[in-house]
Length: 388
Image (tube, rainbow, N blue to C red; front, side, top):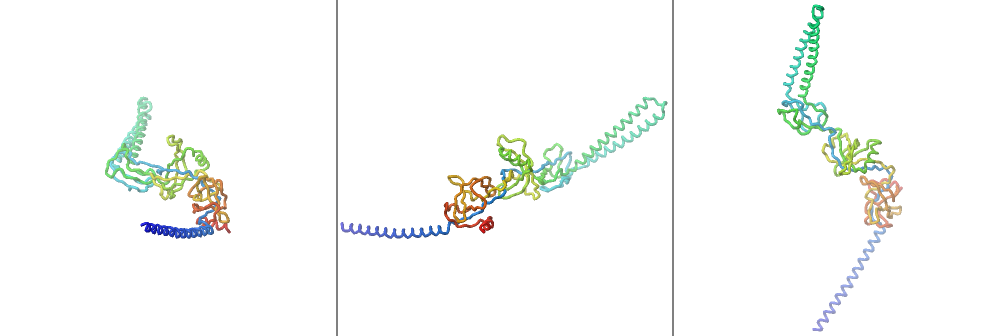
């Protein structure tokens, strides 16, 4: 029994030491391979993408959110009572100023006009007769009393005044008749039709027949923080600053216009100021009620130092970027930045124009380590030209 235990103990020790031997041999081989890989990377450098540090004019935009509204919006209503004979527009149609919108039955108003004209003809005949009588009394001289002459003269003046009243009545009747033809007061796009042909409409009804919104030009109402008001006022004082309207995700430019109005008071509940921009909108890219992102140009920095935004890195010590020298070695630079727009960032301190910065692959880069360079597409030509 004791011999058996001794045998198994020796066998276990042999297996243990044998496994240890082979295991250490294998680990040694792995360390050798890792060493080869590391040395290969050290010789070739970490693959990175670089871009040039440029000097350029840099636009400073104030971003916000806005809502598109018609430059003018009119609810077309009737100004007389009557039955609609004709609806002359289609929903969503672009109409010009003066285009026919609807026609109300004109017959009652035509009759009122004819009646006013007939009344004038009657009063003109009476006036002509009164003038003849006054002429007769005047010729009679002393045979006609002064009272008769004065009375007849007053009758002529009354007839003249009545003619003027008849002219006013005719003008009013003609106006009422004209109101039966409803025309577009502005150019724009029509909305939903509120009444149908054959309905009776009243001048007191507030619903209206249709709403017309002017879309050429068109307006965008947006807001900005109140602390930016001095910059906005300064920009507007020199010339109307440019405003860009984009899709809500900020990826697609819809239209470009100019700032036309700063509201006359700040909203104290939100601490913002409302602004109005006007766009030509000839392509109808903007539509009333649409939500958009806005960019208001408040300044342009002359000869600013600009780098791609991807070059900016954030660490425990602050912002930094990796510059690449002529020896293709990475150099860590602490930087201060300013405005950023469309993937481009202004550098206020830490870099100079003509240098190259790493925009991709920074996570494997160490200060002073060699790098393998690939030039970013947008900057390939400029970097190659500088290398020559």
